[in-house]
Image (tube, rainbow, N blue to C red; front, side, top):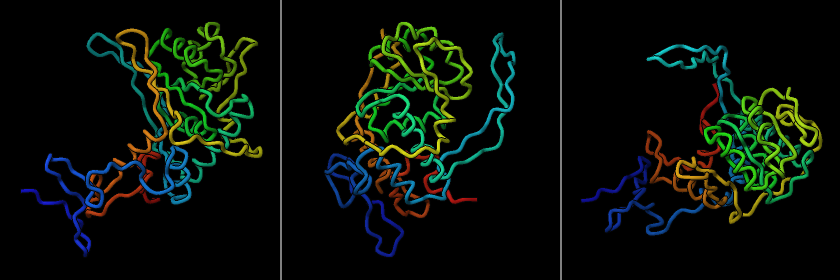
Length: 289
C-alpha cells in the first residue's frame, strides 16, 4: 500500500501522490507535468536573472586553478597529473556582471544578431558557462562542440551551423586555426586563456578576459522566446558524422522544473527545494562562509 511522502511541516500535507500506474506526481498537480520551476522563469536567461536578483551575495560558481602539470607513467602509459589550488568563487552578482559584460561585448565586436549561432569549442568550465549565458542574453544559439570530436568533427559542426564566431580554449587554438580555412563563415575567435596567437588576416581574435571585464556601456539584452533554440548539441559521431541536436529554452526549463519540484528534490529536513537555481550554479543555496 502506498504511503505518500509527507513534509515535516506542521500541516504534514503529502508532497507526492502515486497513481494507479505507479507514477509519482506532485500532490497538487497529479497527471500534469511541470513546465516551469516558478512563474516568470520561462527561458534560461530568466533563470540566471532570477538567481542573480534573489541571491546576489551567495556563491554561484567555483573553480580550482591548475598549479602544476606533470606526466606520470602507469601500466605502460603516461597520464597527466594535475595539482590544483584551493577553490575560488564568484558570487551571483559577480557572475552576472561578467555574463552581461561578455554578452554585450560579443554583439558589439562581432555584429551577431538574435537567432544566430555561436560555437563554444572548449571543455566545460567557468568561462564556458559565462560564454553560454552571455550568448543567451543576446538571444543567440549556443553550439556545443567538445574537443573529443576531433579535427573533422569540429570543422563539420562549425561549417554546418555556418557560425561566424567561435569561443575556443587556448589549448584548442592551434587545431581551430588549422581548420579555419575550411570554415567559410568563420570571422571571429574569442579565446579562453592566452590570446597570443598568430591568426590569418581574415580572423579577428578577441580575449574573453577583456570582454568579461569591459566597462563599456551595456547593449540591451535581446533574449529568446521559450520556443526558440537555445543549444545545438553535437553528438560524438561514433556512427558517422556528428549530429546536431536542437534543444529549446522550454526544453531546458522543463528539466529545471522537473528537477526542482518537491517530489524530485527534498532537503534533509523534508522542506521542498523550490529553487530555479539548481541548474544555474554550482551551489544554489550555498551560504557564504
